[in-house]
Image (cartoon, rainbow, N blue to C red; front, top):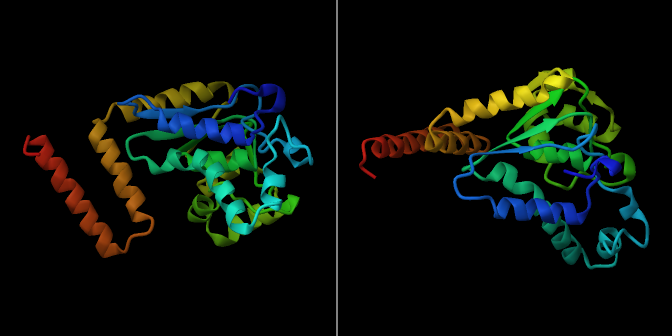
Length: 238
């Protein structure tokens, strides 16, 4: 994200660009790293969008409030498309490298990624509820899955700041680095991913994602079917 003068605040154009990046990844891409230019990861939604006139022709709130409920929900669905592929695609592993504040939509964007690595100065806040809204950019499912309902409720309804070390303890981030060592930590993680066979990484991500909603019996079945296909592939039988 390259709007440091606005602390990488997001607009619908940002979300459309995210969706286009996901749709246009070159074949064979294995890892995608998401960074924010400057001292902030992302200040969340650009608050100028709350004005009646919107921003640069973008008026999502006026469009939603003046639409029937179904059309409004469909518009939000288009916004969500910029957030879904980071987690949903099995062929890539996505990493959010977070420095400074990740607020609202910025926090939800980090939750969209498979892995989150934070600098010591990183801090997270879900501010939507304090603005009279709910988090609606796909962040609630991964947040509840990570920290549980009660902690997720506390985080969302208070909008409080979560520092890097608390985020690590809660499982929101997978690693914390010195602020000036964030790139080194991210590069080491990328190297570890690229050091494993591509299909094994892809299928491991698929197996783990399947476990989120699967029954024990269904997950065991999925494991053995995936493993059988891998072994047959290694033996040249697929």
